Image (tube, rainbow, N blue to C red; front, side, top):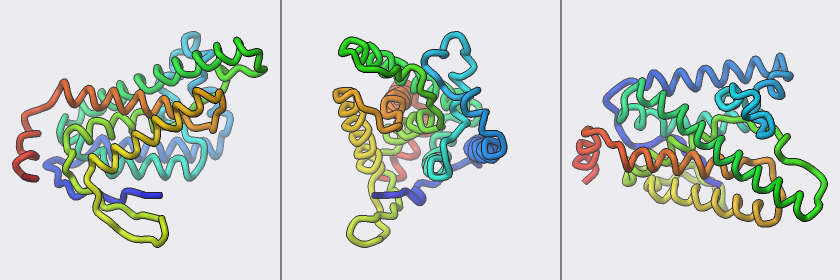
Length: 230
């Protein structure tokens, strides 16, 4: 297990949007604890995706438990500020939401495909009604953009293998391994028609959307980063 603590990658602007997103997610989670019914009302349920389209956005601000939100917010805090610095505050917010929508769309496609396969083999149960929550799809977009924009940035990482230690890992290696992990378990669940409760395809979709965005749309300030790290 490896947990990112911070990146060694200076920014030129204050990450207003990243910090605001963290605050909003935490505030909503506290509200969830007081009103658990909001999960069913605002989660992304594939079967209701088009009859109740607000769920495409609202699910991004809900979380299923303390570890879920803590993990997501750590990743957003570590990687979001540089991506926001690169694109600017308003563009970053728009892209963050767009990546979350892309993640939900890929999750919808994967669940619909799995439901069709389950029906074909006569298995009882419809995954189209299983709610999905979390900011991880949008944050996966942040990771995808970060890996393209800052592949050589160093990520200070807390590792839990044989001993607990701190190591610096290049962004391309840390995020690349994370993406391969999502691909492996996403494919495994799809093939076996089993579900662990983790929306791997949402992570895959968000990551690809973020990476493609960075490949297609880079601002000039990326040049400053290149010379800084070379």
